Amino acid sequence: MSPLTARLLLLVCLALPLYAVEKVRNREYRKDPDADKCTGNDCTRHSGEGRSAHSNKMLGSCIQGPAGASGREGNPGTNGIPGTPGIPGRDGVKGEKGECVNEVFEEPWRPNYKQCAWNSLNYGIDLGKIADCTFTKLRTDSALRVLFSGSLRLKCKNACCQRWYFTFNGAECSAPLPIESIIYLSQGSPELNSTINIHRTSSVEGLCEGVKAGLVDVAMWVGTCADYPRGDASTGWNSVSRIIIEELPK
Image (cartoon, rainbow, N blue to C red; front, side, top):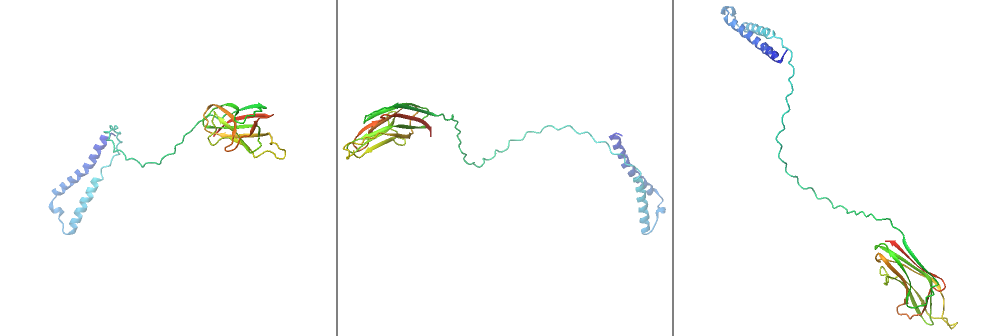
């Protein structure tokens, strides 16, 4: 059964009882007035009950048909008009200051050292350069460790003092301090009526910072001590003397 046929049948079912009721009412109005005469409540009750039963009989005579089939879904609607841009948001709370991390990628440290050695220097000067050793420094931010090892001697009849020290390109170390060693002698030997003459293997050693990268002339010198007379100095007598230079990371 098509939807249209079902709708027409439904309208007929609804209209037919109304038509039947209206026809019955018209018939009752055309009856002999004496036939419906009655007195009291009985008249009202019988008349009402008769019409109600008759109406109910007529209304129940139409059977409701089955429900129609569901309609098809409609086509999708078109997109609406784009909305207007919203109001820009407010700035957020200022964050805390971050930490600055600098990553430094350096090459692995490579050992850099040199040794200069002499056999029996026998250098008897009291003032001046004794020996030097040229070294190539690879980095400016490194330190130089220097060592002199050899025989040192000082003699005099009265009090005297001598000083052995390093220089770097002609200047003593200033960072942090000069690298030096001294020998002080108060007097000779009165018992033997002669001066003491002792040669001992000694060392002068230290670290120097602030030396620029490149070729560095490392030298050992001998000189006087402040406010003391000069004696008779000797360096490297009858033995091996050496200067060792090493570059170290700071």
